[in-house]
Image 1 (cartoon, helix red, strand yellow):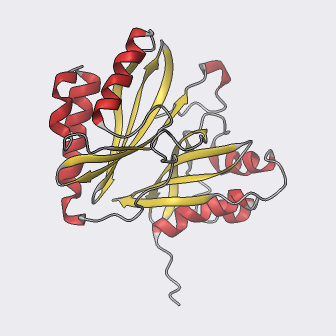
Image 2 (cartoon, helix red, strand yellow):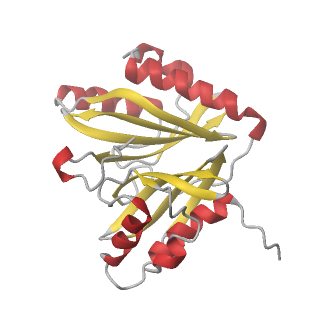
Image 3 (cartoon, rainbow, N blue to C red):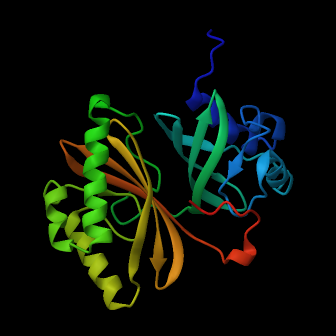
Length: 257
């Protein structure tokens, strides 16, 4: 058995430590002198992680890392587990010299299977087409900018293979036609979903994660959207949308992004 621990394994150890309520394990690979946390509910530094764990219910509740990918110094994971209720998480870790120096996340309540039978986390988990990472990141960046920043909804069909599109959110079922109808219905109801900026685009092979800031019905939110690309088209999508609390409720000043 190799003694070498890679960065994906180190990131997963954080989740293991939190689930086990073990602060020493959760912070094992975190730089104790230089760690910035963008979870606005946590206090800054490694002490914030330790303090967060101390406030969790004492019963162990394993966090299952469903997907884990790496893009240069960044590892990004999708997880599920029970932290003050059943949740779905995205976490991003930035490494320097083998240690975690920065962390971002987004979480939301878990939901039952949607009308197409998909849960928030099921589906393929392994990255393929590793040589196409940068091409796929460029595709998703172009899509996100065109549709959400520029409002060019008429271009939507060019990014999909007809109606072959798998959705994992609870708001609807599979197919581009259902997604388009849902977006139109939400707009009629005054529930406008706006994107103001793209903060980060990370990818490995056919999986690409977009981190963006915006608002829903005027309230600030963070969007984490994970896409699976197949033959240069968007084939599948998972997401977590989290409300951003008012500034006076932040426990650190690092910002969500």
